[in-house]
Length: 357
Image 1 (spheres, helix red, strand yellow):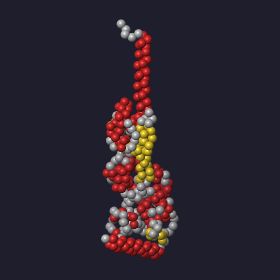
Image 2: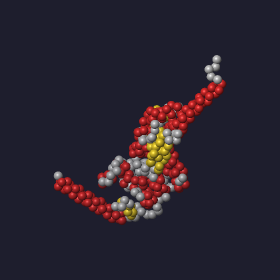
Image 3: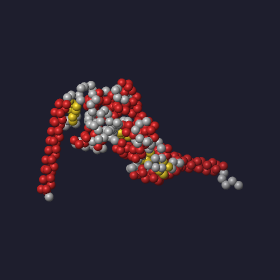
């Protein structure tokens, strides 16, 4: 015996359908609502390892991202996105659960802007890359050793590879492996230097390795880009005249520390000390900028052979040693005056401290 009549069955079915659609619609709206996750200012979400829903909710909350933790966990379980890959993700604006969680789960990252500065050294560059990307600095440092897979593959020493880390800004994924990062930077050097200036390199009296070595010296010598072609021309004049380069940056490199040089420093027995060796040093002393490389490829033509620093941070150029000796004496007088002023200032500060005790 049927409990419900035909009309009652139709009414019950309709009610069931209405309830189902209401529940389904509510759940769907919650999954698709455009303001389920809100960040009023850009927030950088860094996931160092595989992260679950509870950990994700805690990280988002710590960044000031507006979420409902319980609803976030419900949405993740409902959609099947329960674990999220390591990476760098920028949360900026309004998101639905379907708009954000799949990207985190699939590891669809936002690239990081990586800066490579000129005039650095292997240790500092390794630390800088480590600070900007996920890998440890020691992993970057290892790529620059002579025995790394990349240096052996390219047929370069670690210093030669490092010198080709062209200073610039690069967009990279935060989780990129160190070797891939260095390989990317090397490819940029090949594209922007070796290929773009192929004709200039072929016509130059130095080969590419020597061009980079000289550019590295120019990089450390010149404070201003517009002076680099003149400095490059001076060094090239010295090379062509079989004179020693006598470049202070190579002595600083040999000493292993950046400071004002003393007379005895120029006597150090070191293969990079261009006050004691002829020609170029055996390798680069830093990673030169594109401006320094262009300065070597297109040096200013002149007959200067000597230069000395000026108080403004530029250089005074001379054609003869007598001119250079006079300019050097003026520079030394200025240095002595700066020391005198410093000593007077320190003595005055000491007197003031003693009077206040």
